[in-house]
Image 1 (spheres, rainbow over the protein chains, first blue to last red):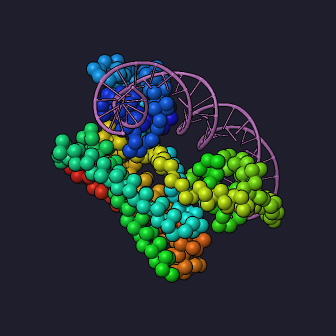
Image 2 (cartoon, chains in turn orange, green, red, cyan; image 1 turned 90 degrees about the vertical axis):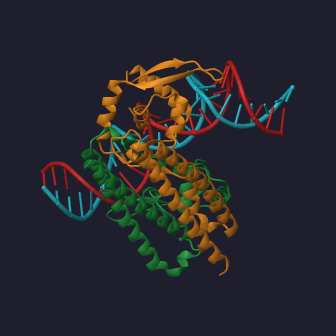
Image 3 (cartoon, rainbow over the protein chains, first blue to last red; image 1 turned 180 degrees about the vertical axis):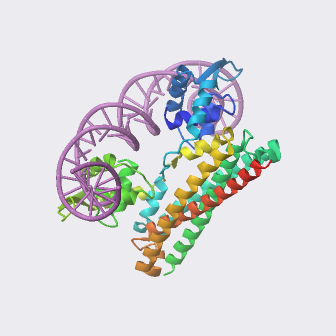
Length: 182
Length: 182
DNA sequence: ATGTTATATGTCAATATTTATATATATAAA
DNA sequence: TTTATATATATAAATATTGACATATAACAT
């Protein structure tokens, strides 16, 4: 059982999903390719943590809807109470930032401009998702027992971090402007 | 040439380092085990991007001090100007947060308490590092041409993100308190 | 005395992850 | 009419990463 397996269980405990849907939902805390997700779902099904049902669709390919079993739920619950592993962050942008003093100001600005554009897109998406959650669930979303509580606070965290990164980018851009005139 | 290789070059362009030292410096943007770093340094040396010198020490084992070559520098410079890959974040804590609605308030609080403790330690370390940089380099640290500029803005980013996460943790803790009395 | 931590490097096996290839249907755009 | 995109799953090969084992010295604590 690796972390990705628990990530899948954490998603499925809220509602049954297809592998395709899981991949998209996973984006918020554990990015994975479908080539990793589909075999792992099969393994979890074989181990009795999940069951699946084939669902035919008109106009789209059939899909497998996976559901968490009681065994899957109890394994997940046990895992949650244990101390989490140290987080892994691997961000090429940050590597480039570290070595940015090697480049000219134009290159540096371009790097930061593109980063800000990408983050702003994410911010718009998070705001939309949070708006939807509040519209659907109201104040109950702020109660730990709500099935959407975890998702809600996680999206809030991401939004905060993304807004914070925009502020930092602006601060750096300002330093770059100053450097340009000295 | 993978991202870790460029991360090593980005470190070495500032100053020659041993593999052991690189592992520690890498923590800020690309966590890697020594079993990945040492063989990669050897490969980069064989490819002519690095050279090394054996340095004997009294009271400590000998070390290999790696230095960037001209070839290494030009390859690094080319890479910096290209668009970075999308960042990867893999944080077990966030997976647990997603499924936190399954647990009781005591477990949830413990999870957040420990997270805050870990982050506060990092904050203290970043503040100390930033203080040292400012003491050593003064205002020149805020100029893009300074060899420490990248490191400086990166530590600033980390510090901001870590402070922001503390605020988020406090916000969640507050929601947990409210849930406890309803 | 004995165990632990920090310094320092190395290798191998196991596991995790990505990249590439494959198949299939429908819609929208060029 | 061809091309791209979204939905959906699957597998094999290549690469990246971790975990375990190995060695060695010195300081420090139990």
